[in-house]
Structures are given as structure tokens and as C-alpha cells.
Image (cartoon, rainbow, N blue to C red; front, side, top):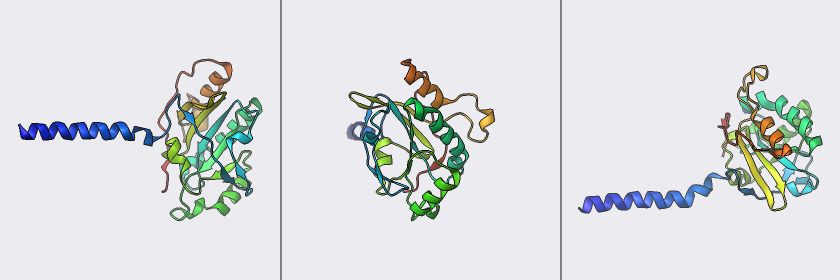
Length: 202
């Protein structure tokens, strides 16, 4: 009997602990994301509130060093070029600790952005306190936010598309489909996908 009580107590403890730590995994669909203020590659601080006319944002956690992130760079640039004029700019954030991955240092970020011709802010999560709020775990990891009167509503979380290896072989463009539906006021059919990429270096 004592063993059973101990077992039940342990199960209850795990359940209660899980209930109170579930939000630590980051935002879910329907949550409102808080704003941030991070250093851009030009040395200036950037916040979502700076983009007063934006209808939404593609907040993408990415970096220089991850092969998956590098494979998606051209597609991220294309997303910004396509949707910035429609009110949904890309905001790229490097979440990695440069002490663990020197290629993701601030000077290297500036060089990479110049070499690739980034058309969007490339911010450094220097204190590494923003990516955990969002629940980003990989690079790249995308969060589509809608700019509403109540705040920045999370509408999509996950991968850019279904083929990181070859853009020409992509069958489902998750991010584009989500943005198009959001702008049209329609239901987003796929709201979450698994982010494919390198683990964030903490």
C-alpha cells in the first residue's frame, strides 16, 4: 500500500511539475509574443515596434554556421523581398553563443550579411534570453507574428518549407502559405511544423 501511495505521489508530482513548466517551452499558436530590443549588424537596436506599418513579421532564428541555415539563406532573402512590401518583413535573429561557435560572432554576422546581401535586420540575441521566450530550438526556426490591436499574435511556428536540401524540389511552402492566408484573412491550414536544423548553441 505504501508503495502504491509513493507511486501515485510521484506521478502527481511529475504531472504538476509538467503543468507549471509547459510555458517554458515557448510560445504556442494563439499566444501573444512580447517585443524585444536587440542589436542589429549596423550597431543600432531594433524592436518590432519600430515597424509601425507592419501587418506582421517573420521572426527567423538563424545563424552563419549551421548548414541548414546556410541552405535557407537565399530563400529567407526571397521571403523578405516578397513580403516586406506587403507589410510582413523578415527579422532574423542569431541566437548562438559565439564562445561556442566563433563563426556566429557579431563581426562574422556583419560580414555574412554583406556577402549575401541581406535585405533584413540581422540581430544578435546577445544575452540569449529571447530565443527561449519564443521556444526556438533550431536554426532556422520561424515564427510568423500578426500585428494586431492586442499585440503580436503567433500564427505559425516551424520550418520554412519541406525540403532544405533543394529549393527546386519543395512541395509545400509552409511559411508562404501561412503568410498568404494571414494577409487574406483566411484560416492557416498548417500552423506548426517541425523545425529542421542545428541545435542552438547555449
